[in-house]
Image 1 (cartoon, rainbow, N blue to C red):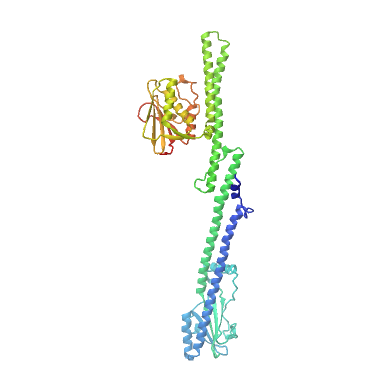
Image 2: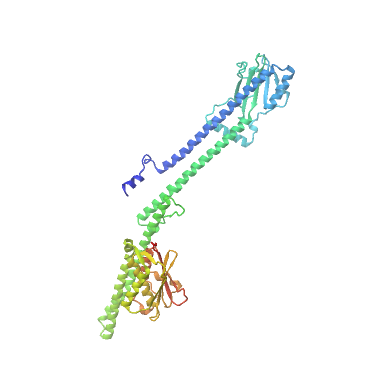
Amino acid sequence: MTKNAHEELKLHWSRRFSLTARILAVNIFALVLMVFGLLALDSYRTGLFDERLKASRVKLDAIAEIITTISAEKRAEYLVRISEKNDSRIRLYNSKGVKIIDNFLISEPTYTLRNPADEPVEKIAARYLDYLFNFLVLAPKLKSFEEPENDDLSSWEHAASVTPNTPHSEVRNAKDLSPVIITIAKTIDGDFTLIETINAHDLRIKIRAERSSIFTFFLIVLTVSILLSLFLARTIVKPIKRLATSSIKVRLGRSSQVNIPRLPERSDEIGMLARALSDMSMALRKRLELTQSFADDVAHEIKNPLASLRSALDGLENIKDPALLRQLLNIAKDDVRRMDRLITDIAEAGRVDSLIAKAQFEEINVIKLIKKIINNRKHRDGDKPILLEYDKNLSLTIMAENIRIERVIENLIDNALSFSPTSKPIEIIVSKVKNNIILSVSDNGPGIKESDYERIFQRFYSSRPDEDFGKHSGLGLAISRAIIEAHDGSIRARQRLDGKQGGCFEIILTAAESHE
């Protein structure tokens, strides 16, 4: 990692804090929002009370001015009418403090103070929530309101200190925590004192509605905070810990027991890391399995010619017949050649991946390469029939390593010729479908069983007749598949598509980009 890249990954002011601490910081921010919401709620409640108290003072002061202009007979009727409009209780006291008018005594009461003991459960729960909110916002505790037993002016606090044109108003709590507004006003001449009480249920409804909104906001913020924590823990901390644990197991040599999650649904950096680690683990596991399997197969295949060679050599001491002796020597020579071929092919199979990884791909004209292979075979093996078909108007080029692709085509031609009758040609067809070059090699042999389509690509597998036993290592097709897959292509076996008898091998490689 370069110095600049290392600097990008370094933490500066937050380097001392763990990932969990950072997640908590996010939650604290959410809690700060909740505190601001609570403060806003208390401001709303205080504002409602102040507005209502001010309106009550203005209204009762106006009533006090009007009372002196009305005859004694009409005062009671006027106060009853006003109280019914305002849903209030208005009391009128004379200069001696004796109550002379009370609208609750001369007409139907405009409100009723509820007894908390008679309220339903939901009302009790709402009242306790009021206690809780008042505690949280540090609201000043209001005095309790109770109707005086002896209803005279001296029973009302602050009544003696009220002067004309300076009404007094305050809020107290009834037993059910509903606000009761008490307003005291005197007439200008001081002969009468008016006291109005209002059970302001509407204020409690408004405050509770606002508190419900705030409480809903609290729940949303709290839920978001919790979900955010769980989201961060699930999407960051949890997968990282799991990936780290899996990586440790791989390092300890237990890769075959580890299944690193790929997280295909994630397109972020965590998903990229998971897939990279999973691919690395699977590649390592595959390489270990292939190495073990390869070692087992090599040991098994070499044992056969070794056993045959040992048997032939052991019999040489006791054989006197020249013909039988010559036969045993031929068997020994065949076994040596077979071992030599095996070792050569095994070495080639083991080097394919590393050689291709180091190779420089170049643009190759597939037709020119096949024609070169056919011409070389004519000089080497004689005139064996090979037909080549392709469209001359198409650009049939690929990006590949020339020597490796040549090896694959040679293998397929050898394979086809070994199964075809001598007089019948093998056919090589090159075509282009979209962005793919398709090369097929077909023979006129007995064909390939469907059950063998994949098995023939296994190392050391051979379905050749008994007379060909020992002449082929069984690694040619395995090497061919390794080379093609290293070029991001594919190779498969199938029957001929033209309906004729015989087998066919088909290679698909990506076409080189045209520069025309």
